Amino acid sequence: MKRLIALFVLLGVILATPSYAAGVTTEPSLWDRLRKKIEAMTPKKKLSTTTAAGGVRGSLADADDVYWKGENKPESIDSDELGAFKKAITLVDAGKTADAQAAFSDFIKNHPESNLRADAEAALAQLQSTK
Image (cartoon, rainbow, N blue to C red):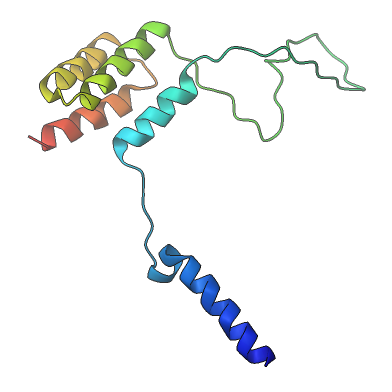
């Protein structure tokens, strides 16, 4: 009886997770990854918070400048760069491939030292391959 119950439980787990059973994993597209990256880079409104640390000596530092273990620092980007990149992605979403290619090319030309340059080049290559 216990074996039968264990078998049903195991069968239920396998049937409840079809991607595990089939070995299928889905990877987000280039455009989804770029949207998430832009969302992470977009400045957020700072909430008023209070933190305390005991026994720390040294120079005074703003709470935003302190490294907290496990916390990733957001990449900093100029608002003009961010706006130009968002505009290019918006053109892709609208289906305006030629305009999006021009926007990504302009972005690469105008912002050669940008953190998003590699992403813009990948997006441009993706758009050119879909012609």
